[in-house]
Image (cartoon, rainbow, N blue to C red; front, side):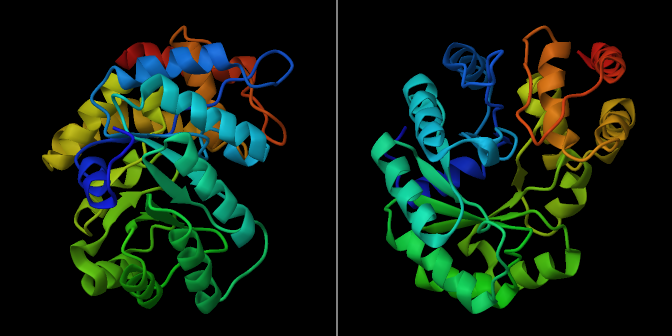
Length: 304
């Protein structure tokens, strides 16, 4: 599973639902390998198309480079024989290149290239940044368009032409016109992944724009519900989709939106709600309050 060429990886990822596993910490907020392995094994036991280690939901932004490498290696050891493991590349170009090479050495199946840290960048600069990372690895690369690295359709077309191992665009913006322009220009040369927080909310309308899959945070703690939701989206079963939105997703969003950073915190709380102990988040994130956890648990009980 770890030696998938880029085109085979693209075919695998676009065929089903994707997940970003949380990264477990112990009481001292250090990486808890045993609980992480247990979580990965559980996640890989369902019909998921790919697991993204140390991503956004995995609090990759709070991990040191050494911790990222360890988390990726643990994920590869634990589940890469069953599910493709996608590793992160973050920060400036030199750091992203080093992480891409480390991910390939660790046996990851592919790479998700996050926006550069902090600094603004021109489209020309982003082209060179993406291209440098693609040149540094034989892995299939997915670029994440969001924050300070929102890509225009012309930029996506250029990096796709320049870099054969660029296989996908993950959209974290939700701009309908821009996605329409991008798909019209680039077509099926790339796979398109929904990457907005709680992507289920946007899944049905984005499907019409060529976004055939998305990363589901809900899969972390409600894998069967998340897979049912994905199946309803792909079948364009509007009745089922909106029923599940009303039953769970929208009330879940109401809790998530109470504080910045809760898009990650609520996922760990969801694991705790189903009896799997998600543990705490690292600062600068903050955990849900006890009252919010109780509210989430009652909501989860209705659909689990």
